[in-house]
Length: 88
Image (cartoon, rainbow, N blue to C red; front, side, top):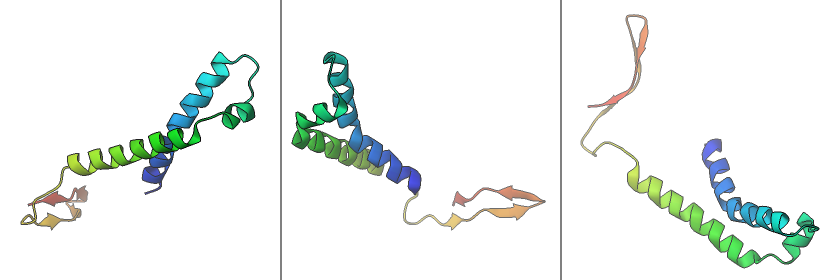
């Protein structure tokens, strides 16, 4: 669960990180504080939110799952080995 939260936070912050990196590379004497004073924060927020929403929609629509009539068998021990769970 923490992995999902961290991935979404990183996706949300990615446009701002790219913007700050670009501005620091193109402006010779700019500090990160100065870059954020002139930053288009509304557009960066919107771009980050759009990336998170798009990734959630993509993964929700492409996740492989079973049909409602299938039965899930949880992992079990057989002959001293763990057999993985499966849909039947």
